[in-house]
Image (cartoon, rainbow, N blue to C red; front, top):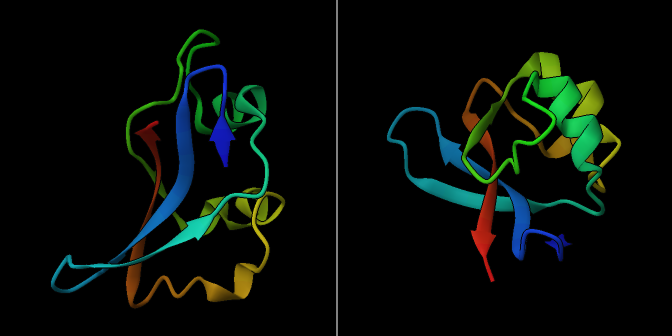
Length: 86
């Protein structure tokens, strides 16, 4: 998902839990920065440009922003909300 305000592409990176290799990425359909700030406990001015771990407790929240939440396998993978500069 392209965040035009901060000029970044936002997505969830998927890493192998055991060897830490990059397995893939999950596209975010839309992004409401205010809701993400509130959910993850960030200051209202934080642009959320860093890497934020997504855990099982975040799944219900994240599910609203992705196409298919069944792709998550927390026993095999680690997930991080990330932003890449455009």
